[in-house]
Image (cartoon, rainbow, N blue to C red; front, side, top):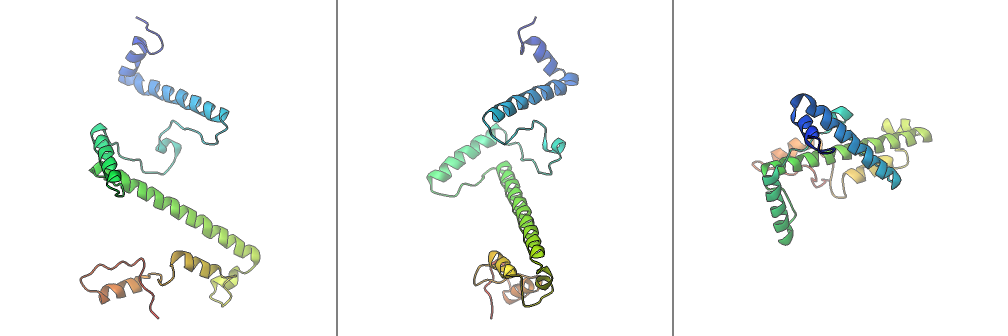
Length: 187
């Protein structure tokens, strides 16, 4: 009863619980090897890894499996939202969960890049020999680096929100939720 590579024998091996995971793993590994060979031939730097995030030791929250019904609803809603000129957004609970996961991933990437930028700026300050004056509150702030940071974080006409200023804004606007991200600066 042999019917080629993916014939009865192979199907039987995938149907048996004891050997299925080993067989599927081997198929995935071979697929990844073939994709990586093709990427190498195309001189593309990215590579494919068939292992899940946990086995790769990547700390990333996986997306929720949508299923065919939810995916169809999301595709239909996306097309309708685009046709209406609206910003596309998820409409199903699973789609909304995946949207939140993607937003969280984006924020994590933003924080990592911010940390790298701060480390780079700290290194530049140390190389210039001005790090001591900038961090001890002296007037020389290492060539305006501190002001540059403030301008990036707080656009003109706003001020950074501290816990004290957030409490004060809540007290001054009873019964209203006020955005603390861009509170107008007070003189």
